[in-house]
Length: 415
Image 1 (cartoon, rainbow, N blue to C red):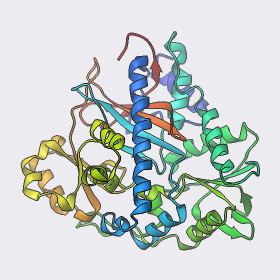
Image 2: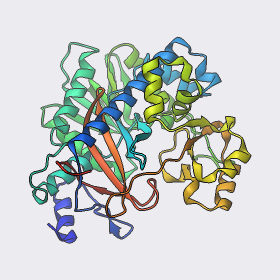
Image 3: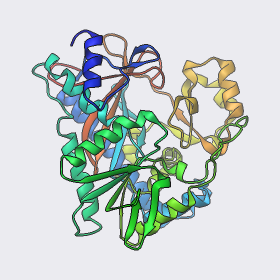
Image 4: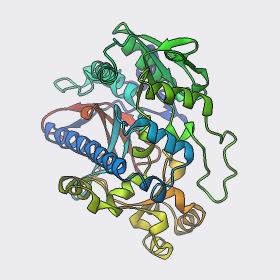
């Protein structure tokens, strides 16, 4: 399968992955990213440390809830999600890590709400393993560990077995179908029944919740927390969302069943805080609130991050190449603007239109390129606090745009 057309046919044959091309260009790279056991261990350590750091943040906020309004400015429905979660936020996450030119590892964020990339990480490695003999597949056991994480999350709530899972996702977005298919296959292979649907298909029942009329023990939530609540524009010239109202009925049904111990939610709704990039700013602006170990992790792995409301505009304009502007819940390129990769005019307009109460600025860092000039973004999956796999994206100029995905293997004598 060294011919991309042959590889594309194999991609379709998985029944999970699709769209081997994006905008007419290959979406995947046949040549694997090969990292040394030493680097793999460093990346795993970083991902687990950043996950611990977010747990430390949650514990601080549980003791000082006034920050929800004074620092985060959460909307009423976002506050409801946080309080109902009781501080629970983690089951599955993906830390986006970069090896920098100074040799340090930096984490630009922890995707703790609805992390993606799992099907590509698992099936790409399977498809390309034969072309990389003698190398280890770090994703080989991901499906088993994924199901184990769900079982353990459910066991913390009840002694009843996990027999039926409801996967709730935005059914109108076709790019999520491969993930839903993968999750379903992994669960059904363990004799766990799966029902899939959107939040609009959720209903409260006397004993819990039902999805499409079928009662479920656990809801695997692949619908973003900021989509469940009020949707607010982040740009001064934005027209607003046509569906800006909170999903009141399904959200209340799910939160109430969760509070009553009648259903398990993964990821829990506490991710409304950990996914919010204001948390990255909290690490730096409120560093003294953290224990010494956590402060060391902040300095070691988290780039300087501050709320835009506390950043001088003239400084941002003068130091354009040193900063990245990110919205608090945005995960797409349109809400992440890297000053080093845009013109001064575009940067000035971006800073002008960004609503300060929804943005942070993060210190730019230089990523170490590989031998072919690619910039690797090492996505390290974390399941129940432990590193569980790698999802590597490669780009030429900016880690946020035009990335392709490569299989990831571990072997000696490599990066």
